[in-house]
Image (cartoon, rainbow, N blue to C red; front, side, top):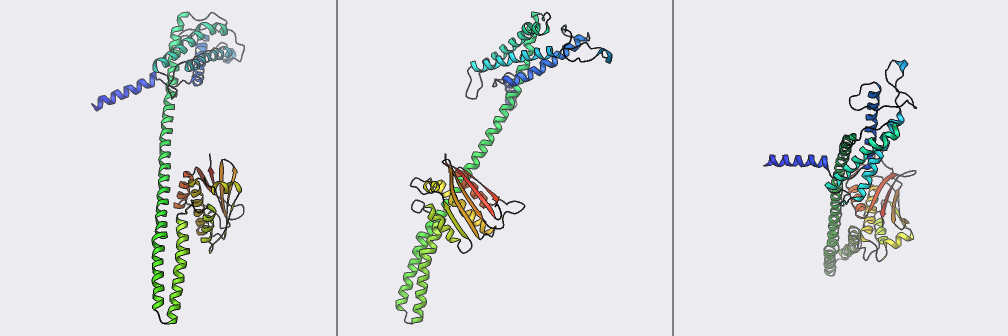
Length: 406
């Protein structure tokens, strides 16, 4: 059963290749048919001139354009008129191409531009007949200035033209179908990559949010309980020195609880509903204050977009995450002492994020893509953006991210 099924599938593929249907390619057929008829006219002309006809000979007039062969050259070839050869081929190919184009517009096609098989074969047959008639009965006398071929020659000429058109159409259709299949596979693979990037971003944000909630709720509560227990221990402590030491412990616990833990929680998962992007970026810059000076600027349009009541959450988070990763790279890889972060909207349809540093710049061999680049790729893809890392004008490196707002 499997063998019979394979034979049927092969047969259907052969039939599909030979008789279509395929989309119409009038101008490709024009070029192929023109070249084929030119070669055939050359053969007929040369064979007729040397008296070696095997099919039908056409009496050629005296040449008016450069000759192929000269009597003095020893080659027994009479004059061949290139205007006749090219003109006949051009006129026939134009008639066929116009017939295919008009027929393609008149027949009903599906969403991919392919007509039904009867309509497809009908248009090809009509174009072949018109081409055969044009070549044998109409255009040959006009170009050759001699009696045309016999009307009986219309049928074989039309059949040859039909075969030529069908072969060209089938080859073009097969190539187009193969190209469309490759495009569809590439598009599917790209959509899969984008879906995976979105899953990575969502999983990363979910993990950070869970850690932030743990820090905010559980750790802060535990630190508060410890501080209260230490305060109770202070009341029971008689030694002044011990009481002072315990007071310093309580102060440290309060600082860790109110500042360090809260700041870490916000950096892990900024609550952009209550904390603006400017505040979140300022806190991010402050966390790097001991290692690098960070300056953050907004233009008026970007500030209104990113900190308004209807600011897009994905875009705001993407800007924050890309900036976060860029600061990490500037300090850890570039040994930068100063970083400039600027946000601007050159038009209403795009947002530009530029992060420049004064570090040691990019390595001569180029950057090595790691998890940080993957994170920025994912966030930029989520927010319809792209990024690139280029050398600075004098020193350091510049990260440019551009987000489409349409």
